[in-house]
Image (cartoon, rainbow, N blue to C red; front, side, top):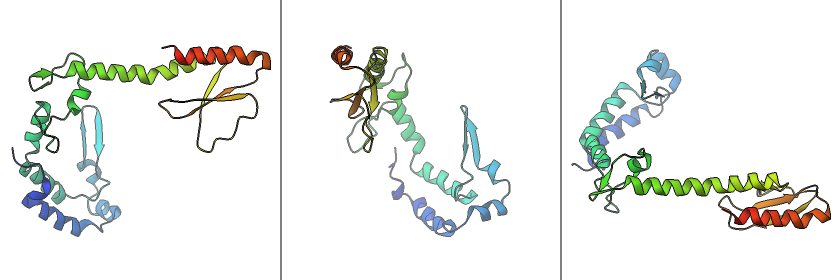
Length: 199
């Protein structure tokens, strides 16, 4: 596999020179010179429509980019990534982009071990962690306790009691126990503490 460092290949210099010739071009000029560029510089695949016509790009740009991809062995690097080979040269390890997006039951072997189940387990833990504050907030709202995100310049709550909740993954939260009489504060604080501590 050749070096993935694009700057080491001859076409890099050609691209730099080409850039100098089109850097000041205005899109109006490019569309006026090529009215069909909106259709020509667009692709559709896998349900995605990609329109790159509104960039300073010409047929020459595409030709040079494709040549640079070939010189850099882009296809070989993509195949190596999907095969779980160590293409992260700074850390000499496989990149996990493919495993992060792999469906359950898929196989991606790194050093002979299928890493997809471990990655899926990690994603499951992240989902539970992310959902838990929302579930707690719902339980608190059901008991009359409202959780509001604390903004840097948030105005103070005009009525009710406030308390901080440290350690929130979303930053500090302001808890406002709004519109409650003094006799109701203690039960609501107990409900808040219970809701925050329960899984």
